[in-house]
Amino acid sequence: MRILVLGASSNVGAALAEAFSLSNTLILVGRRVDKLRVTANKCRTASAAQVSYVEQDLALGISAVLQAIEGKPIDLVIDAASASSRYRDAEIDSNDIPRYVSADLLSRTEVMDHILQNQDIAPAVIFISTVLTLAKSPGRTIYTALKVLYAAYLTKIKDIRPDFNLLIVYVGTVIDTRKETRKPKKLASAVFKAFNNKKGKVFFGLSGIVYLVLFYLQPLLFHGVTVAQRKIRALLA
Ligand SMILES: NC(=O)c1ccc[n+]([C@@H]2O[C@H](COP(=O)([O-])OP(=O)(O)OC[C@H]3O[C@@H](n4cnc5c(N)ncnc54)[C@H](OP(=O)(O)O)[C@@H]3O)[C@@H](O)[C@H]2O)c1
Image 1: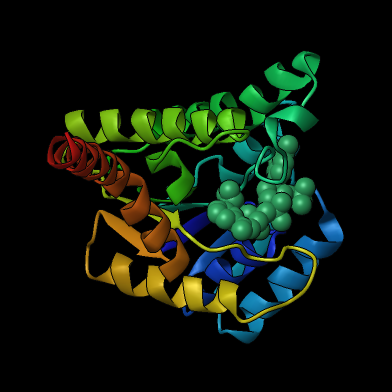
Image 2: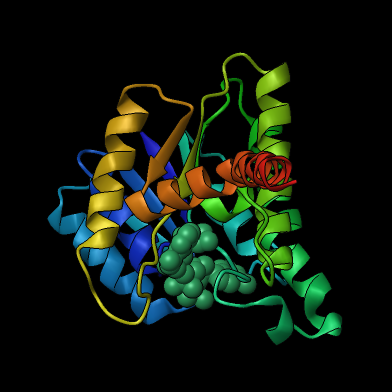
C-alpha cells in the first residue's frame, strides 16, 4: 500500500506509521522535520518498502503534500494531525480560529478531494478523533467541533462512495505528547487490528469509555434522583 500519514511527527502518528510499515510505501507529513526523520527511520527499521517525508504547515496550504503525492495513487490516509489538540478554547485567540479551521478542516478536505478526484479507487482513511466529540466537552469546543466537522465530511464521502473505507478512532485516554510512553504503540496496535478487521469505529482507553457511560447516564441519574425526592416528600407529607 502507499500510505499518506498526516501528523507523522507526533508520537501517535509515528507509532501508527510504524505499525503500518511492513512492505508499504509511506509519505510522512508534519512541520517538525527532525521528528519526521526519526519517524522515517523507525518505519525503515519496521521494514517499510519506501519512506519519504514532507514538511507542510496545513494552516498555510497543501502544496507540498500535493507535490509529494502527484501521480501516486494513495491506498490509505492515516490522519493523526491536529493543530488544536493541545489547546483549550481559552488559549485560542479569536484571530487564530481561521488558522485552526484551515489546519484541522479545510486543508484536510482539500487533500481528500484531490485524492478522490485523481484516482479511480478511493483510499481508505483512518481518522484519529477523541471521545470528547461524543460528549459535551466544556472548554474544548474549537478542538472537538473541528474533529466533528471533519468526521462528518468523511462520513458524507462514505455515503456516496461505497468503495470508501473509513475507520474513526475515538481516543479516550490522555497521551503525554512530551515523553515517549507505551500508549501510542498500544493505540497503533489496536488501530492496526481494527483496520484489518474492516471496523468503522474503534474506542481506545478505558477512562474514555467510563467518561462516556457517565455522560450518557446523567439524565437517568437525574431522573432517578427526582423521582426518589418526590417519593420521599410524599411519604413525609
Ligand atoms: N494526546 C492525547 O491525549 C490525545 C487524545 C485524544 C486524541 N488525540 C489525537 O491524537 C492525534 C495526535 O495527537 P498528539 O496528542 O500526539 O498531539 P501532538 O503531539 O500535538 O501532535 C499533533 C500533530 O499534528 C501536527 N500538526 C499540528 N499543527 C499542524 C499544522 N498546522 N500543519 C501540519 N501539521 C500539524 C503536528 O506536527 P508538528 O509537530 O510537526 O507541528 C503533530 O504531528 C491528534 O489528532 C489528537 O487530536 C490525542
